[in-house]
Image (tube, rainbow, N blue to C red):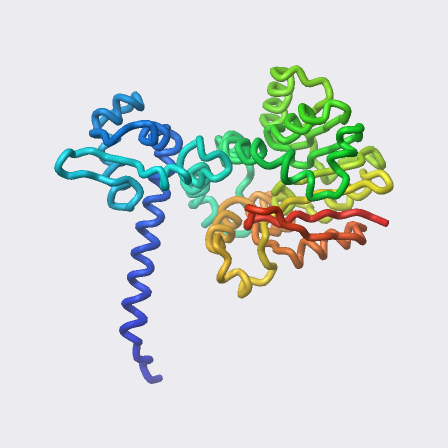
Length: 357
C-alpha cells in the first residue's frame, strides 16, 4: 500500500491551530480563576497597578496573582507596561469579563471548563463501558448555574423573554398559574413572582439543593406567590393545572425528554402555552461547523448534559440536539402549534412557543 504524501503546509497550519487551541484552553482556565477570585472586577476599578497593588486590592497572595497576570498578559487579556511594571485591564475587555457586564460577562461561563474537566476520567470510563456520570459527581454545579444565569434573568427575563409570547405579559399581570420545569435555584420563578404579584408560580427541579435555594430567596423577598417542589418532572402529574409552563435550557438534559414534554402538554390548560428556551443549533453536525460555539456545545454535552442523562438510562439528547429534533419531540408530545422565535441580542438560543389547538 502506497504511503500517502502529507501536505506540509496543511500539516503546519493544523499544528499551529492546535497550539492556538491549547493556549485558548489555558486562558480559559485562568479566566475561571480571574472570575472566581474577583480579579477582573478588581482590575477594572484600578489605574495601571503593580502585581502587589492588585493583590492587596483583591486581598490575595501576590505570587499567585503575578503568575496569573503572566497568563493574562501573554493571552492578550491584560496589558503590561514593562517600564513601570504595571498591569491594566482595558475597558473594552472588562465589558466581557466583569460582573458589572451583567449578561455580557463571558467570564461567568469559564468555570464550567474546570468543573466539567474534573469528571474527565469518569467520562472516559463511559467511553469504554457505556453508561454515564451522575449529577452528584459535579460538586458546586448548582451554584455555578445560578451564578451564570442570574444576571441574564435579571437583564432579560421580564423585559425581553416573556414578551416573545404575544399577550403573555398582560395575562401575567391579570393573574395566571405558571410552572418552571428544571427551575434550578429558582431565581427565574422568583423574578416573575415579584414582577407579577397577581399570578402564581411553581418551580420544579430534582435538585433538593436548588429547591432550597429558591425557597430561601422567596422568603428573603417576602414572596407569597411562589413555591418549589423537588420532583422528577417526567412524573409531573399536574393535568390541566397551568396556563404557562417555562423551561429555560433544561429539556435537553432530561433523562426522559419525551415523557417530560408529554407531561408538560398534559399539565397545560386549554389555550395554555409552553415557552421553551434552548440552544440554537442544528440537529445535523455538518450544519454546526460554523456555529460560534460549536465545539463548546459538543464538549459540554459529552462532559455533562449527555452523560448525566445516560447515567439515568436516559435518551442522552445532548446539548446540540438542535431545532429539528426539538420540533420532532414537541410534535410527538402533542404540541401541534410550534413557533421558533429569536430575541434581539441573543444569538445562542431559540425561543419555542408551543401550544395545542
